[in-house]
Image 1 (tube, rainbow, N blue to C red):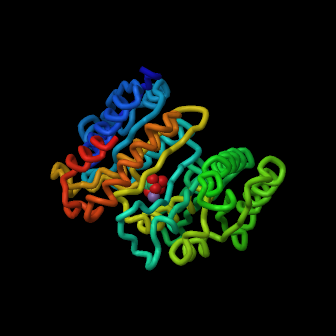
Image 2: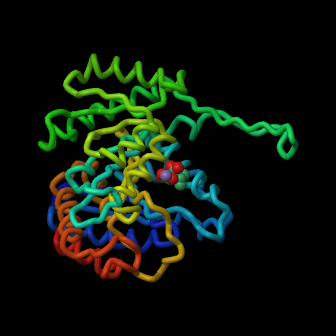
Image 3: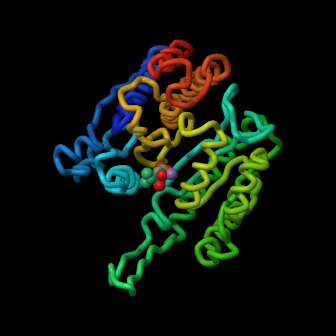
Length: 360
Ligand code: IPM
Ligand code: MN
């Protein structure tokens, strides 16, 4: 038996618990095959707990979770709770308190999956977005004054300091060096593209752009640097996704472009992500929501959750196990799954989990 990892599992709301069960199944298969010890502990954070107890997240939650090697999250979002309370009170709070300053979101089309992009396939849709995850407009200063009057003022500022920008860029450069297209043998360069808006947000993205070139020139001369405006990036994500390798961007821009990316890779049913603290505990989650209307029906697609589990294995350093899970997913998307949509996969949620686990 190799190393034993302590995993905190937050199944969460809606269909979260169902997809997490399938992820668990696949993790257990990988654990048996590769001799990895996994010790999973469940936490009931989510909408039901909030409605029952009135508490969104206990104050000791982050300290508790820090004792684990990784966190595996299903979904947060409950139809009985005002939007924002759980998202900000659980998901964002954990990202911030655990200082998960990177949100890693691969945009990868698996074989056999339909993309809305004409004439594009797995070869063209194959890049990664490194989203800054603890700063910017998500945590900047703000407030409302004179609320409810005709003179009401609302401010929400995009705030970045050099430290936040630099640590995110360094992670992205390292990532491009290790996992860029050249490193993976599918291109002739490892390229990091900075996505910004230097033509309008001339303070914040001036900081990002200067730091990008300074760090790149000095410490990562082997990584090719590109700069793209965020609006143009959206256009090219649709028209020429093959141009991209690794992209790095601010919190809000990353949030927006990764939903666009997700739909080009077949939708939320397959899009996985990791909230990463390279020096601490990271949290892996499918990037789609809790899809409450499908709860308990055993028809939701668990592949995004399974791919998030693969990302977790990779982050823990269990590379062969991570690859085995990803390959198993590719095999069933290529040969089995009809559609990624709930109820149209041709299989139930648990059957999809079984098929992946068996192939691992
Ligand atoms: C995401 C989500 C979250 C975000 C919400 C639910 C707070 O949209 O993970 O992309 O904006 O980061
Ligand atoms: Mn989002």
